[in-house]
Structures are given as C-alpha cells and as structure tokens.
Amino acid sequence: MPFRIAVIPGDGIGPEVIAQGIRVLRAVDAPLDFVSYDLGAERYLRTGEIIPDPVFEELREASAIYFGAVGDPRVTNPHYAAGLLLRLRFELDLWVNLRPSRLLAPGMTPLKEAPSIDLVVVRENTEGAYVGIGGQFKRDTIDEIAIQEDVNTRKGVERIQRYAFQLAKQRRAAGHPGRLTMVDKSNALYLAHDLWQRVFAFERSRTPDIEAEHLFVDAAAMQLVKNPGHFDVVVTSNMFGDILSDLASELVGGLGQAPSGNINPDTGRGLFEPVHGSAPKHTGKGIANPFGAILAGAMMLRHLGEGRKADQIEAAVISAAGNGRTTRDLGGGLTTAAAADAVLSMQDPVLLAGAGPTTDRRDTPMRRSASADILAQRRAVRLRGVLRIRSRERDV
Ligand code: NAI
Ligand code: MG
Figure 1: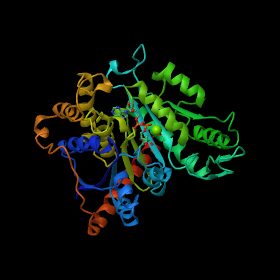
Figure 2: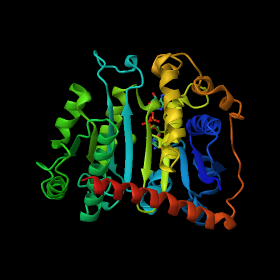
Figure 3: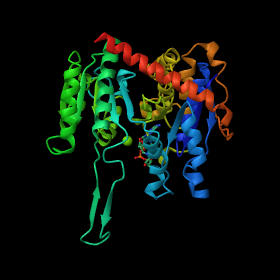
Figure 4: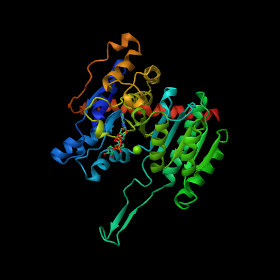
C-alpha cells in the first residue's frame, strides 16, 4: 500500500515549488499516493472557509502532509494563517519542528569564509508565544494594553529537549559532532525559561555522554554568525526557533533552499514544508527556488522510512547546487522548473523517465475506505520511531 500524502500547495509560490517537489518524489519511485487539497487564500476569499472540518479529518488521517506556503496580501485577517498552518501544527500536536541548515556548496554562504555548516534547529512547535493567549485592552487609545502570553509546560519542554538529546545521539552515531546547544533567555525570562533550565539540567544528567551546552538567545544569534561550524543540534522555544532557523538558513544560501518537518514522534504524524512563506513578489514569475520544497519532500520520505530514497534526493540537490544549477537566489540563472530538472538530471536517468508532468492537482477527496490502511501505516512509522529510540537507549 502506498503512503497517502495530503498535498496543500497553498498560496503564492507554494504551488510552484510543491509541483516540482512532487516531480522529484515521483522520480525516485517512492510509494506515495498524492491527494491535493484546494486550501488557501483563493478558497478563503471565495467561500470564507479555511479548513472545513471534514477536510481536517481527512488531513488527520493522511500518512503525511506536504505543504507549500500560506499568506496572501489580499487576506489581512490574522486568523487566516493561524487557522491553516498553526491549526495543523497545534491540533495534530506536531510538537517537533526540525529545521536543518546544511551548506550545499561553499559559494552559497554570505560569510567571508565558508566553514562546513551542517546543523539542525529543533524548535518547540506547539507552545510559547504562538498559542494565541492574551488580549488587547483600550485598543486604539493612548492607554492601550496588548498582552500575548508565552506558554511553557513541563510536558512540552521535557519532550522537546529529550527529543533533541536523542537526535544528538543519533547524529553522533552518523558521524556528526553530536553536540547539543540549548537556547533560551532565562536571564530575563527567569520564570518561564527557568523551566527550560531545570529540564536541561535533568536531561543532561540522564545523557552524560552527549556534549551539551547552554546559550542565551542573543549570544546564540551572534555565535551562529561568528562560528556556525560549532553548532550541531540547537534546541529552543517556538519563537526563538522560528528566528534562529531563518538566520541559520541565510548562512547557507537563504530561505529558498531551507526545508522543515513538523512531526509528532508519538503518533507518527508529520507535515513537511519549505521554511519560506508565499513570497508574493516572486509569485507567478517562475523564479522561486524549489530546493526547500524538494528537500522537505526528502525529509518526508525519511520520516516514512524511505531513507535511501531521501538520501538519493539530497545527493541530487547537492550535486545540482555544486554545479551551479540553481535559481538566481543561489547565484544561478535557472527557472523553478529548470532547477528541478537539474536535480532530476543528477539522478539515475532510468528514474528520470518516471518524473511525470510538472503539476499535480487532483481534487479527489481521500477515500474513507483507505483509512484503515493509513492507520496501519502510521502505526508502522510510529513503531519504527519507538524501535529506533529503544535501540538507542540500549546503547547508553
Ligand atoms: P517569505 O519567506 O515569503 O519571503 C521572504 C523573502 O525570501 C522573499 O521576498 C524572497 O526574497 C526570499 N524567498 C523566500 N522563498 C524563496 C524561494 N523559494 N525562492 C527564492 N527566494 C525566496 O517571507 P515574507 O515575505 O515575510 O512573507 C510572505 C508571506 O508568507 C506572508 O503572508 C507571511 O505571513 C507568509 N509566511 C508563511 C510561512 C509559511 O507558510 N510557513 C512562513 C513565513 C511567512
Ligand atoms: Mg519563520
């Protein structure tokens, strides 16, 4: 049974880059069945709907979600973006946001010297300042008060730090430094981030074989620019992770090539997306970089247990980047589709034949009868995660 992938191309350049990501995923012959969902600004403007409840249930049942971007200058209601992407992150409890930054080719860094940069930001994805708790009082008067709470729960802080320690172990086993940096602002946020400190002390004592350090977020931003090669796994809160991962992605070539995964390791659910937004000024010009979306597709494959095919895609992107076959944000001159062609041409030519058309928009709703298969697949993914963690624990 193929995995059922719910595709939400979304707004702006989202559909342009996701179409190329699907071509590449098809080319490696991954066992994926794509079902495209017409969600986004067009639908919202037309019908007022963001995600109708029956559609949300279908998304919940998918093996994974492949997401483009949300955001349209015509939509000013902030509840629109929150009702689409944040709702999926929060209600599917996708508590890990993995944001890797890897220098694909030395020429892509804006830094004077090109160190080897290969780090991953593990961002807490369901709490912090983004939960929408707060209010405005005496709005639009001189006495206005605006409050937005920063929510940190023991459960949330523990699970994200524990995950990051495990990831550091896993990366060390794969030849990375396996160094963990916990980033907070506990000197100023001495209530909320004191919890991060106490959890960190506990997790560090449980995992003494992992080199773990702490940085305040301002120092971390400075060190990321000054000495990015030092970092391996960075774990932090929702807002700091959002900001530091954009900074880290700029060090390796910019938002256009940055992938991310929103994952719940307990349930096996996952949503994979480029880090960038809808980039309205680039929309419809065929110049958006598809590498972030393509690499997000590779992360999705790895999550589903198709690591070999994920490696194949990543290697092809690195080859394309190394040969300067990129869109202009990375110094090349290719269109979105031509950059994806470059990735495809770096793969086995036999696989290239299966690449298929450049767009994939089907509006077929997901069949209910398939849900049992999907649940079985998701259980298998979850079990693989559990087994991985158990086998790592035996290594301690
Ligand atoms: P953005 O990520 O859309 O674009 C910022 C700039 O980065 C662009 O102007 C462009 O210069 C560059 N860029 C981004 N993606 C690129 C690509 N694939 N190829 C080449 N260059 C690329 O962020 P911005 O302009 O702040 O937000 C635009 C809209 O997207 C807003 O509505 C915002 O709320 C939304 N947004 C959505 C996100 C998501 O869906 N995950 C994330 C960030 C912003
Ligand atoms: Mg961001």
